[in-house]
Image 1: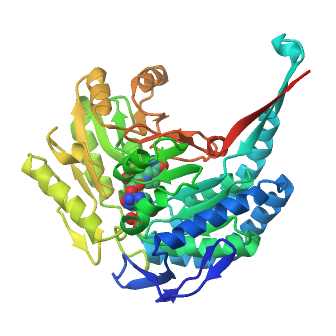
Image 2 (image 1 turned 90 degrees about the horizontal axis):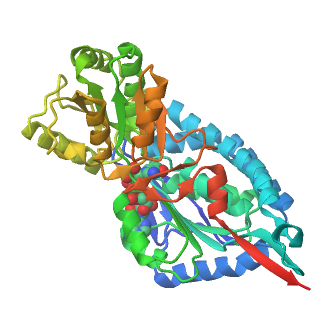
Image 3 (image 1 turned 135 degrees about the horizontal axis):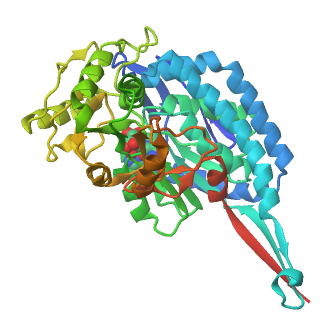
Amino acid sequence: MRLFKVAVGNKVITNLQNRLCVFSPINNKVFGVIPKIESSKELNLIFQNAKKHFYEFQKTSFQYRKKILLNFVELLKQKKEDLVSILIWEIAKNKKLALEEIERTINYIEDTIDEYKNIIKSNNRVIDESIHHIKGKQGNFSLQPLGVVLAITPFNYPLNLLIAKIVPALISGNVVVFKPSTQGACIAAYISTLLYKAGFSNGEISCVIGKGSEIGDTLIENHNIDMISFTGSTKVGIHIAKKQPLIPMVLELGGKDAAIVLEDVNIKKVVKEIIKGSFTYNGQRCTSIKRVFVDNKIKKEFLDEMNFQLKFLTIGSAAKGNYDITELIDKEAVIHNLKLLEDAFYHGAKSAQKVKIVGNNILKPIVLFNVSDNAKIIKEEQFGPVLPIMFFDTIEEAIKMTNSSKFGLQASIFTKKIDLAFEIANRLEVVTVNINKSSSRSPDIFPFGGIKHSGKGLQGIRESILSMNRIKGIIENS
Ligand code: NAP
């Protein structure tokens, strides 16, 4: 068991009188213990202090903020090993994926600093009478930070998604109160102390530890919040949006990304790509491929190849090696997937694989076919290593099936006919379509987001910065 400190405003808290215990999915034992926030009084004070400090922090220069962020990058590099080990034990991410998450986060910070410079240049404008033809009126427009940003993050990318909110906020001169998921709270607390050590030690950041079910409502109702950036499930996202209808908000929610496979593909290659897109980190990614639609003409070859290649996925504990399939985040996640499987089989689904739990919280990957439209797996996010495959006769049918989901994050199309792929892509009700690749959030410089039940607003380096700033106009009249 490991004790974590947490940075809240201008203090690092070690007092464990009120504490959150985080259990490891690897052995179901307590992995980390962190000081938590319990009373609404404490929470109010955190927001009040954050707001107070914002008025000072917004006056600091870009160079000052950049310097501290680069100090933070150095600390991330120094602590890489420790960060990897926390990710392994707290969320059962294998070492390779954990390292990738850290590298990507470091790049994200560096790219955000560069992009902020460009954004400021292109958004600070003077519009005078040579442009608008009204005499004696000069508009001076500039970007200004919003104030206190509340960032709430999910368990699956507890480092990258946290930084993708904190850094655009800080580089712009906002202050941040962040609440990580319970599973992911250890890494967030650790990160808070690194940010503090790097120089954000005067009240720029506050990490609030506590369960969403216990402190969530008090947290999101606070009147000192100026912007909310939330990533997590659709259910919680809608709840937050209802509670704070007027506050600027970016919501990145659930997904049910489809892959459409046309008859002209190299089946071997496409199956390999779909397995990667669907089963990486056990399917616990918002952009995991969660439904596959294949042309009926290649049904047999596609299924045979899928069942063949599935055997090569390695299965084992995240603590023991770089296995493809590791522990799901908790027992509830296993049960959720088992229930979806039971329901799918009840509705007539078939599979060449047996449902099997290995060790602790590890569910063997399963591909389903003959899946009925009434099965829950068609509609709900599985967030696990279970993949339904359906078949179509016409492209119209494939488009209809893809758009029948309430989610609208990303989709993939596999074909050699690029013009046709563009035609289909333009008709899919999602924000991003990937041609001949699985869905993915990277590179982070791309705008990223969802429509329908997958979210509101965009992330991506540029879009996140813009979402945390507003245009201020000062008009001189002479
Ligand atoms: P979740 O259960 O919705 O939790 C997300 C965050 O909300 C956690 O910090 C959680 O805290 C907090 N929370 C829970 N109830 C709350 C409340 N009443 N008020 C305020 N905050 C509350 O999601 P998850 O299981 O961690 O993550 C998986 C989900 O995130 C999936 O649906 C996935 O698709 C989605 N996701 C989306 C994206 C995207 O970019 N679109 C990226 C990654 C993940 P506790 O953990 O303490 O409950």
